[in-house]
Length: 68
Image 1: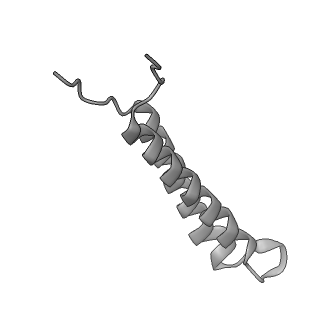
Image 2: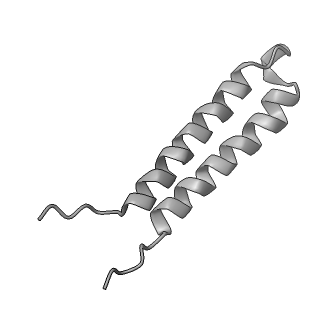
């Protein structure tokens, strides 16, 4: 039997976290202010990236329920 390190829910959360990280970094790169010092580069993008890392940590820490 092929036993994976994480459950299905863990992998789903990891994919959601990666997508959130990509969206956050994309938003930061869309800032038109010099050196990225606008709202998108300093506030919105980093908050979304932090949310993505929190989702990734939750995906790693989440323990699936045992099936009986």
